[in-house]
Image (cartoon, rainbow, N blue to C red; front, side, top):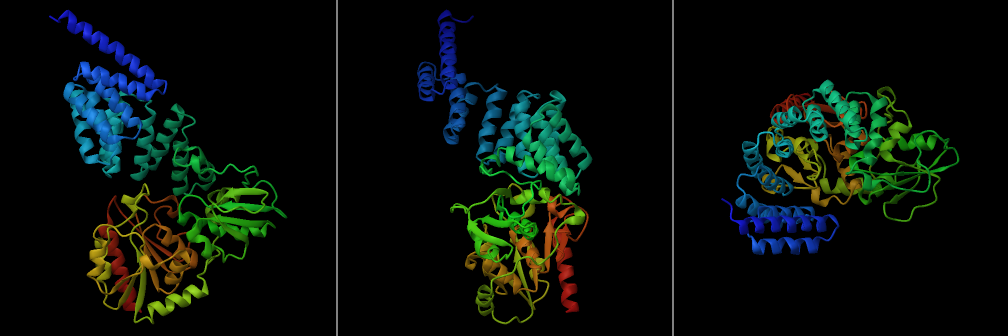
Length: 497
């Protein structure tokens, strides 16, 4: 039988807890924290107060403190599936996904239908590239809640990665039926359609990027109107501003001559590493660095909206390549630095930015490329990789026939010069691939199973770059077979040279 004073204390704690939660909702977090700590002074094992403090610290991004308090809540209430799930969620925010999975599993043992645990488990599995298991986790959510938007959306993305595109598009449609303004679903549906070659709907959907959480802060709110191909441009000045990655600017700079051909004066705004290279485009009246004062302009267009503005189809992709060239002074600099070639010279890069959401899928561990380096002793290998990762320094140091230049490249003009002095470029899907293609250099690109939209599907060439040869994975993570094919192609090329 419960003692009356124990019940009274618990009721008082409940009342104080509700008051603390209300303070937190009103933004009075310091007062709420003091209230919760006072509860814990009187009742150190009051798991609800511990849980609430953990959530407050989590909301502030103070994950270490959140983890401590959630651990206390788990200890105080070991039967709670919610505390286990939330402890796993905090670990997830710390990128400790394998550990997080342990607690999601414990939560699901305690409560098999715990939707948050299933959703978070799916997210961690997806992050770890365990796509089939992640798909199962999201489908279990939908068995309990058929209209769960997070599960529908994440399921659509995984179906895309698994190249189950009909199901993927149906899943995006289901997501948008439940949440018509879900910007990420619209945008990712656009990416799927572009990958499938449906440019008409794809470019339209691509404009939803500005409504997404990841991109909306990058939107430029100029007083001048946005140009998407409607207004005549003759005699007007249009600002084209770069966005997203360097590769995107390099790829879509091909549209600038078309803009100038309409009679427009073109002002291009770029990030600093692209300035000297893109300033060489004669179609631009001026090229400025982002952050500097802008000259007068009448209209503006984000660079990745140009395909929509020009109503680009597969048949009308501008392919006047090369449309970039390396500055003569940089060519002379690197010609002297590299010295005359003794045989086939290959420039290469094996990884993109580590912060890219697809990095684990598109980048290749350097050591995996060993069959390429062993293909022939007559090859001069030149690394243009800027960002080295764990083990890369040691690998490069052991191979004297590889010259690493990444740290010596000041900007894309330097990289363009080195690529121009190579016979072949081998690179993963990163800015180097687009630069080599824009320069018209022969370039081989190993591609992940479900690649970025611009490489399309089931072809070994590219309508964007005539000099590109694509080597595709036959399954998720299947780099060994890709590298073996490339090594064989390299040996064949050496035999024919």
